[in-house]
Image (cartoon, rainbow, N blue to C red; front, side, top):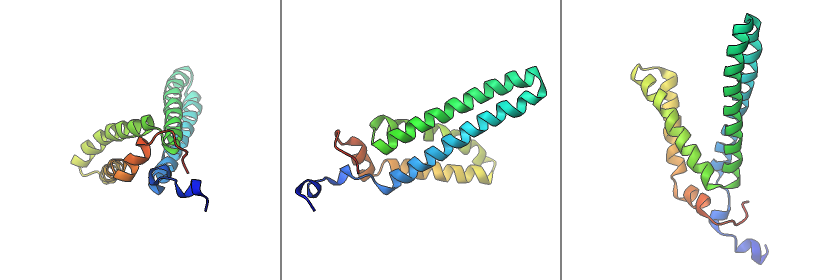
Length: 139
């Protein structure tokens, strides 16, 4: 072990949960992009109106996927803005889960639980320290 690696601060090491959250964002992004391509392809089979609707839905889904890929990169790289966006998107995602949970929809209940766990994790001291650090290298 070198003196440089021994001096590495705890907040310079990427928490394992951040890696898992990044992988989930990448998966969500890929599914969104795939859904956008499928929406455009399948709805275009319905004629010109279907193609127009498919194009609109497809563009929104592909753009959403691209945003999630950017956030995933930011989470992986330890960027503060990515943590902030992840918190905002998680809170926004809780709204339909809360409404669905009121009707005892099991998928909404699961989504609500996952969203609450993600928010809890993003506010843990070691995660906050990881995103609050200066431009030190991330390992």
